[in-house]
Length: 147
Image (cartoon, rainbow, N blue to C red; front, side, top):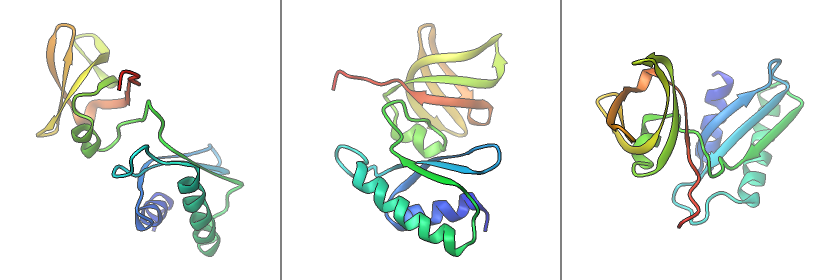
């Protein structure tokens, strides 16, 4: 079992979603972002401590060598990684960067309409575009303070 799979299994076993996992170049720092979609107000400090404590034990048992473990909420500008993220956050404003440009353009800002058949639909200033999920390099929510 690889490290990402081990962490994902542990986090999901505790009832959380692993949003993202970052490792420093030598793997000395493990930084993960967790969410609990059904919890009002999102992840709090107690949630992060609970996951951190459990992961510390699991990583020790599995002899994973690291210096520091950081557990955090994904924040207001959370990354969108999985197809399910694009369905869940339909209607939200996002910033999106493509791996390969389309029509000379790699960066898109607009309102996410969802995902279907491997295509992410986005409403931008010039209309609606469909972008291949596999061509997305990075995508983040744009924080909204109107709610």
